[in-house]
Length: 75
Image (tube, rainbow, N blue to C red; front, side, top):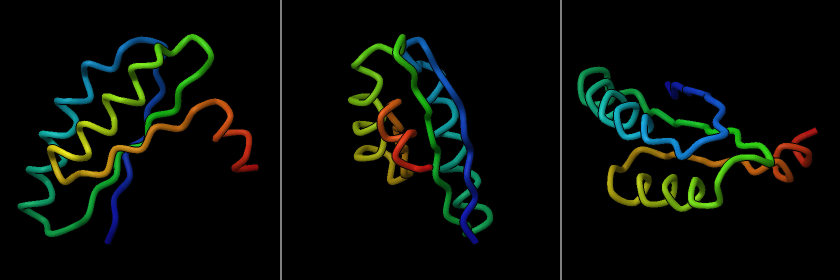
């Protein structure tokens, strides 16, 4: 089973590190895959996308950043 956590941000998402740690712990205990989805908006700093990519690389937990443009393409 795949579990998704979704959040929004207009700031640098420093809390994501805690979410990733919790997701890693959950994955170890349950065996379930976890994805964290971050929906940004026009006020979200550009480094948010970089942070998400770095967290994905370093943790093994998928952290996907949805730019406002990506969000519009989903519909």
